[in-house]
Image 1 (cartoon, rainbow, N blue to C red):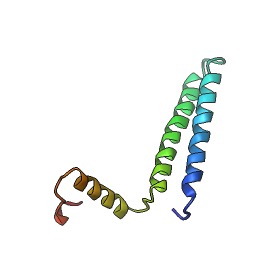
Image 2: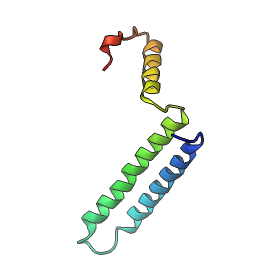
Image 3: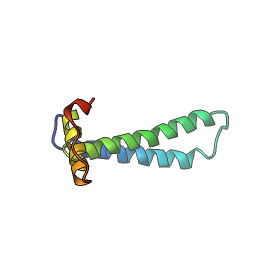
Image 4: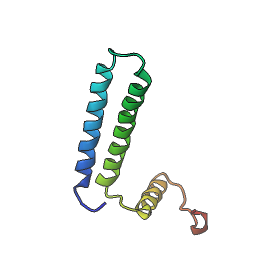
Length: 92
């Protein structure tokens, strides 16, 4: 992630995808029934894409930029739950 404020762009993309999905879902009820599977796949893709872009925005907003950052977050969660730290040879 190159920019500090890139999470805002990902959030905007998520909101736009979600809004387009909701609009398309409401609009698709009428029309040609032969194209319904294609329309349903397109709308489902918008909802799945909105979910992933919002997840990416959440990760970027929290300052997680690498796998090592993820490992550090996992170690912090384990220590806050009272679990003992993993040994170095246990990590994949």
